Length: 347
Ligand SMILES: [Zn+2]
Image 1 (tube, rainbow, N blue to C red):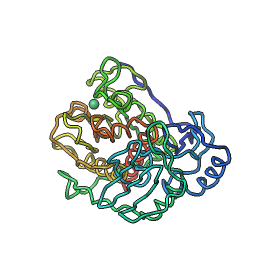
Image 2 (cartoon, helix red, strand yellow):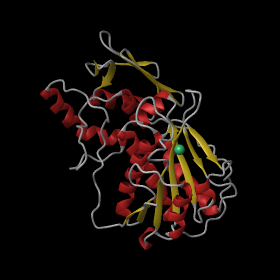
Image 3 (cartoon, helix red, strand yellow):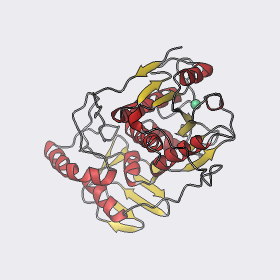
């Protein structure tokens, strides 16, 4: 059994960089400089991300044009189709259709928007420059998603007061699979075990400033038995347990985020499930509900509020492509951390 205990310390990790995960070969230095200046003002408005800060991680300039999946994430739309000629984003009754050169055009909900020179074709795909992305975001306005249909936890039972975060809550983060067990395969990127490990590290990064005690059931590509994962959490008398997975389905049409709790789970678990779902819902294309119809061992045998999140489907081409990017994984991780903090604060 290999567990990694990460104590909260004074070093606050601010290494988050909001940037497209895929790189774009530069066009011209002057264009890049102008875009960088514009983007410094523009990107926080689109993404809510703070401006880039010095980091020890690989730095990709946020001034670069956006790939279709990144654009979809920033606008809150789903990637319907993207190829060398078209970017087609849809969702919640809204649409964005982008056609590339030689006759570039942009249709926001069917209304044309002058693309200027904001659309570039490279590496057999279309890229959208930040200035155009910002104009599209302004014309599109806020995308209103339907309220999630929470199942099994409605109405919410009265919640027991939870410990404030200041009293050093113990949070166990469980990246599924590992080692010889790759989890779900991914035609478009790394397998489930890698996707979920990276996501868990980003959740830990996001939680560290809150002074919680973090325990990871695995911190690298090793396999840990299910019963050992449970034992790590029970032995630590953890306040909560979050297991992170990615889904697969025989049909490539199935996508979305699902959250599992144990059958007959406690009201506290329901509250944790709701907190995480509320935080995740704006970031995922489809929300498939909170489910309690599976007896997952890590949920049934843990003695604290415990949830298992399925981030999305690695068999759905667009969702798998998004989950294969660091930017999207970091976005989801930030939302999970936000849900955990909200739960610990009893809000
Ligand atoms: Zn899994």
